[in-house]
Length: 274
Image (cartoon, rainbow, N blue to C red; front, side, top):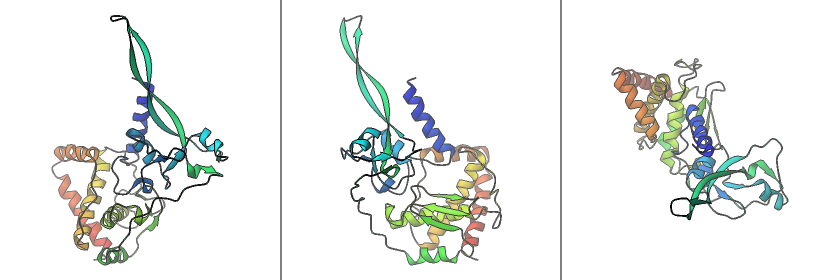
């Protein structure tokens, strides 16, 4: 297999093992699709995934040479991100004695503008209007010893070691309901901390494992309970990778869904201070 295909696949697997599904997010990645700073062109296909799964809040990228030509410079220690493209090579067909055009996948590296200094940057894309939902805000405020909730990231996750939730900016989500649904999902995860309900907080589970699927199901069921409590639609849609894995795990253990629902109810009651 072409080495570039291996590089792409390995990057996707690495993200999945971290618990991230880069092609399915309920917020606008980088506030807009990744694009080149110089040409203004939007990156397409797999490049949208490769650049979108990086944790940068600015959608603009450029090559090392482009940065230098703009009298800027890449910050020391910055690592470039891969962008792929097809190039055509001439290959003689020995049977027809004609020359065929053979597409070959190649790649080059780009840097996010936040990795550079000395650049004049365009304004960031206009953010959507965020309209707080009182009932949803009330649920968050009821959580008596909730973790720190920080915004401004290009990911949504709960970090047990720091007892902290990281979320994109509220205006970066595709809708107000998407924000609350995502936040509720992470709040349920946070109840697993040892100082709360102690659901194997310190245990590291790989994507696809039974333990990982169990905790994700608890969080997703708990999220649906909280969305119902707030009278909003549960808009947190998991990818095919999650769903297929859950189905396999549930087929292997018909008691799992009942156990997950029980844990989700305890987590919901804890958050609601019942």
